[in-house]
Amino acid sequence: MFQFHCFSIIVVLLAAMTGCGADNGKFSYQPVSGTVTMDGEPLANATVAFVPQSSGLESGRPSTGMTDASGKFHLQSLGGENGAVVGDHVVSISTMVVDMNTQEVTAKETVPLKYNERSELTFTVPSSGTDTANFDLESKKKR
Image 1 (cartoon, rainbow, N blue to C red):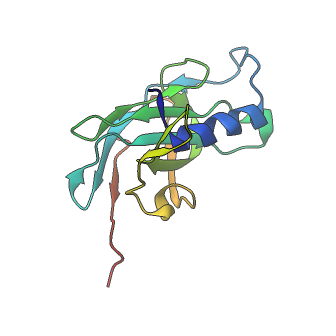
Image 2: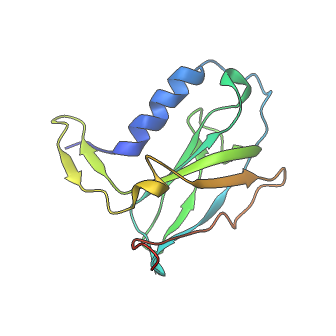
């Protein structure tokens, strides 16, 4: 049974909209890794997606990674480059998993919409890369 994180589908569609041709080396990709926690605990099996913020083909390809049991992730672009393109990104984090054969949701979303579909998260990838792209999410509204 083939499963796919739902947000990965969205990232693939974004890549198609921004162009799937070769980057021709005009974008600088740098290593990006970090940790995701929710309510102070590691968030395992989540898709982390960085979508460059620029107009169309000028932005580079989105990058994604999966968190491990300790919430750690490493990004790779949809073009196979290690890391993410240097610059500003909108970041989305999702735990929803969809079976690609049946389109059935096999793992429900546990992350609030403000971190995925309506993401308020941003990150600037520095020209030297980073291993501190850390995100501390909250599942409950602040009182």
